[in-house]
Image (cartoon, rainbow, N blue to C red; front, side, top):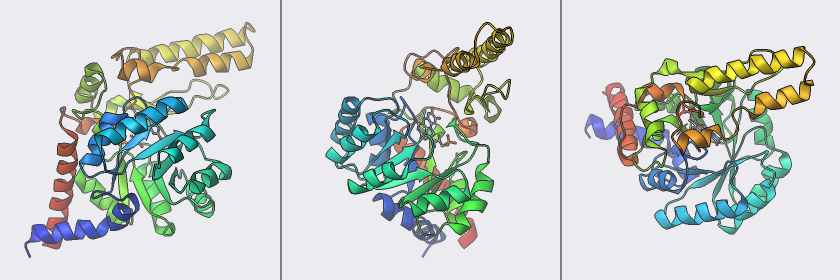
Length: 341
Ligand SMILES: Cc1cc2nc3c(=O)[nH]c(=O)nc-3n(C[C@H](O)[C@H](O)[C@H](O)COP(=O)(O)O)c2cc1C
């Protein structure tokens, strides 16, 4: 057996649990990205052997139904659906997944209720949840979740405070009951292998797939990713602890600066007694409403939200999804080859 064959076999063994859980060849979940992860990118990831995940975001049940059907028309491979737990129609969205026999549902955007987990499981689908800390990982496993994603602060979009490298040490060794997928900052196959070796069943990648040829994101959005380096992808800055801001990692643009100005101006008005605390907080929260759509779909990269992870520096060109996945696997195998040799 050549060292390359041995390395490939080792990779197969390392992510076997993840592949079996997802029912695909490559244990890479396409991280659901609102507006970005629609039928074309999701199907492309699944067709390339990975596991695409539709981002439901704020879609209505009817739109989700159409998106699932549209995806199925483009692939006969398995894919999942990511639902945001605070969506006002969560129960109906779960029903839509059930009606369409979706096999895997990711519950994101805050800790899901035990009732939501139960409801998904009753449909026969597997439930995947995000675990931001070890105690919550244990609690979720007790609630019956079938798999976990641990996502470090390097990731794009809404983030927690802890880095991927620390989360994996904290959670992986003590979470053996369910497969765990690692996300946040994964841009190359060597990193992927390192998490598998620490006990991950697979990984979840978002940022690296934004510039996939099949991805419908606006050309301006993709260009912004291609130009950016890791240090351009920073978390939102909160000016005053009395007015909390949900941390979101995104590329710095004019909107970022305007958000600072808006916070300053709103907080000043509150201090002068012109508005109450609740109104001020809502004005701050509403600043980014619709901003991701404006950037991804309309191409407003100046004032829209350019959610991106630190791995954006490793996005250097537009390329087919299959090529991105093949590259990751090649790098993974090369790094293992050096070890088996
Ligand atoms: C543009 C963008 C939008 C995202 N939207 C969502 C979302 O709607 N739901 C979700 O659970 N995660 C969302 N994420 C997080 C991804 O699913 C994934 O976990 C993350 O991108 C992984 O880290 P990486 O960007 O370092 O690869 C988003 C990420 C990005 C970059």
